[in-house]
Image (tube, rainbow, N blue to C red; front, side):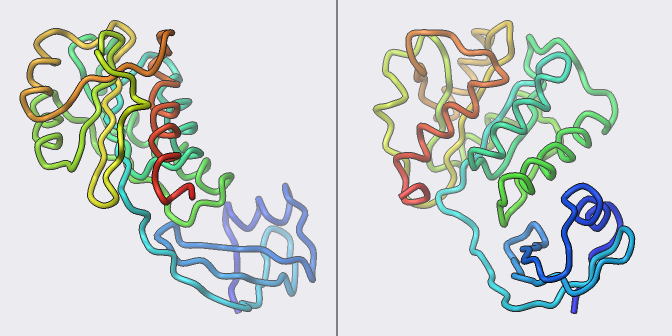
Length: 225
């Protein structure tokens, strides 16, 4: 028996209006999923009878997006879209031309909250990890350790559609800020092993480029087979 209470219980009982006898799946955000039947509704709490459990392994390859921090709520929109598509890790990047500079942990906390809510909506067994912001030097070190890194730039000689994702390991996608990636940043990231690619004939906003790129790459892996 499982008691679903707190925010999740209120959402299920009050917003979704689940009633006794209905089926629901609950998870811990780290791959454990339980198939349950509602046995009792008590205000903002649900009592659930567990019918089955399963452990969903981490998907492979791991898709990571290093996302330059955009202004306003565009970062949260980017996180939501990337989560729905299937991105596994999101790393905020304090790029040279990023307008906002996070001086506390509130920005990352907002991104994590949006990832959690989007993961529930998308019924993902694993909630994407949202890391602390990184500098360009730190981003370059992550690139050096990855199986493959794609640097999205309108000036890329080759289209992203030509990329064959690795079956294992980590695939990183780097999305620049609205003002573009500076020449020095491009040099540092490419020196670490990244390759430049363009998405298509149009220039996408920083809030949508990561999700579009991840979807294109995932469509060429066994994860979307």
